Length: 287
Image 1 (cartoon, helix red, strand yellow):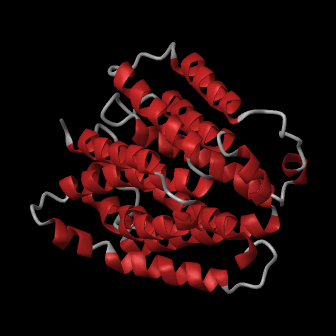
Image 2 (image 1 turned 60 degrees about the vertical axis):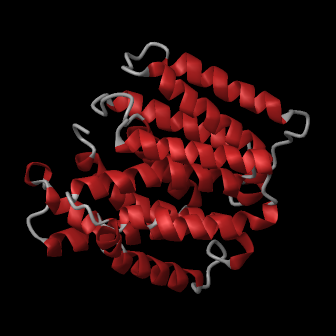
């Protein structure tokens, strides 16, 4: 079993243990912080090295150009969220659908099928949001057309069923080398989304089914046996990301306030994800 599937299996076991033993929602933020600081942010904190590790996939002529483009994309994304939250959310969802799907099929199929990558990622996000849709309505108050919808008559199992049906219908015609294991992992994820709140659901998926496999794949690419030495390379950008988040948190804007921490977190993640996607697209090629 390769490093990707091993790390995914560890993540699924941990997620299922959370369901089995139960996790009070009051610990959701603590779990989120621990996972994001130890796995989530670090998996994207070596982009500046990954971008130059493979000469055949190199997009940048120098590190200066890399930093200018990378930081510009982050700033553009934040400004976009402030000017038009709807557009900011839409771009985040479209990019995340492709990126999450691309990394999700690793270990099960080639990432060359761009449509499959997008469809798998869209299914995961759809299930994440559907199974926590009432909570999501409270968070996305910036979109009154959605937040004001009356969904009180629908049972949670209804949205879980929709998630499974959409998954089966949307990917049934794709030629996937290891379709059953992929179905099995996504189905387990759906159960996790159904049994946990939005922040916990996102934490478990993003941390253990997305970030951890990518972090281990990056470690393998560095061709070193010393994981601690590799992990230390992630610390500078992890610390800079925390400083960036703190400064943004102090920004006096109705959208970026402590009154809606989860929305703020998604804005931060979307801003860091935008440039990260382009680096990972080249990195996972032929993986």
